[in-house]
Image 1 (cartoon, rainbow, N blue to C red):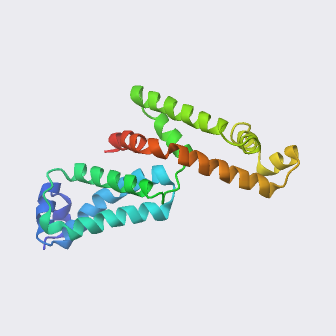
Image 2: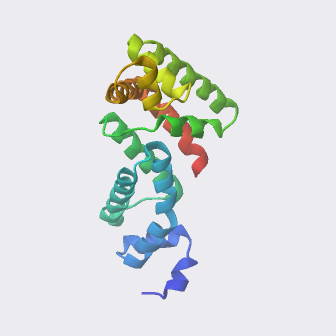
Image 3: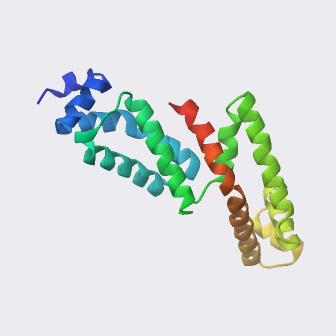
Length: 195
């Protein structure tokens, strides 16, 4: 076992070789190097601390479990693909609660292709908003486009605040479902610049 400072300076390839030989310190260093990047990718999409922590933990548990059979040439690439697959699997099983505003914010950060993707997502969202039942659509637009509070919407439409909350929840659930088919493309585009 080497002193901590010596491990810090070793390249990933050496640490992977040491990991294959059951070196826990090498594993710990790799975890410390990459877990926050991976966590940030997941958190930018999910905005759910528990989900993100679980995804990162599962990825590194698998890395440790498979350590003796690892054939990794680029750890960064391996982790990128692994977290992408975990995110996609999580979405496919519909366990995820996506933050639509986070997706919109992230897509704004990138140029050319991403701008086209942002326009496509905006179009999809607008089309799906128009498909909402009339009252639900009206409440959603007052909330998201006119930035009225639930109380203000309830007062304007002469309905209860609870009804407003329920209608917004229904609208968000419907809109998330409408984006599910497009999420693998969105996630792939968003993950690429983060590594």
